[in-house]
Length: 254
Image 1 (cartoon, rainbow, N blue to C red):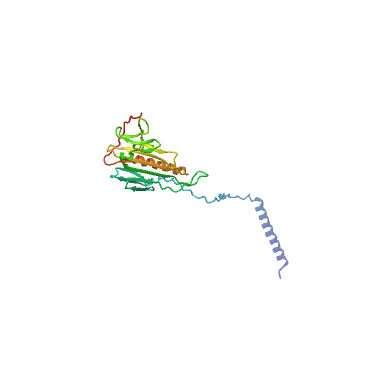
Image 2: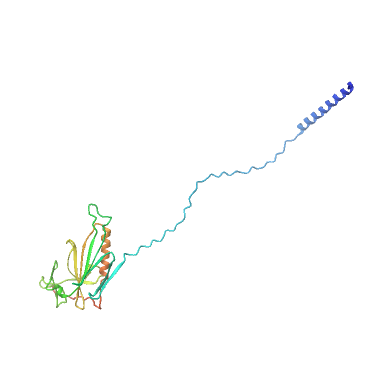
C-alpha cells in the first residue's frame, strides 16, 4: 500500500511534466516561422489539337504528249503507166489494166458530229489517174468547157467549139497549190457528185488524165480531213521514167 505522501509527489510530478510539454508545444507554435515552400514549376502541357490526316499530294510533272503518227500512207508506183503517188492506207486502191487507170477511194465511217437535221453521211472521195495519149481527145471530149480536143499545132488542149479554137488555161491538179501543172478541161461543182478532170501533158507525148469526184459529208471534221488527204495525194503525184511536164505556150483564142 502506497503512502499518501508518495502519491502526492507522483501526481505533482505528472502535472509538472504535462505543464512543461504544453508550454513547449505552445512556444513552438508561437515561435514557429512561416514554412518555406520550394516551388517546382509544373511542366507545361502543350495541347496539340489532332489534325485530320491530310493526304500527301505528289507533284506530278505533266507527261509529254506525243501525237500519234499520221495515218500510215502507202506508195503506188507503176513504171508501165509512168506515174507514182502516195495515198492513205485507209483508202481502197483499184487498178484497171485495160485502160491503164488507177483509182483510190476514201473509206470513211460515219462521223459523230454532224449538223442537226442532216443524216450522218460520211464524205466520199474518188481520185483516178490514167495513162492516155492524144487519141483520148479524138475527135473531142465534150464538157462544160466545150468540145475539148488536142491541138497538134499548139501541142495543148483547146475548145474547138469556140471560133477560133480557144486554149484552156494551165492550172494544177484539182487546183491544189503545189501540185503538178495540168490543164483543167472538165468538171462541175454543182453536179452530184461534184467532179473535176485535168490533163497532165508530158514531154514524151503521153497524157495523164487525173479525175476527182467527191460528196461532202455531214461531219465538218471529216470533210476537212478528206480535203487534206486529197491535197497530199495530188502534191505527191510524180512522173516516172524520166518524163516531165510540158507547159504549153498557147496563144490561140486569146
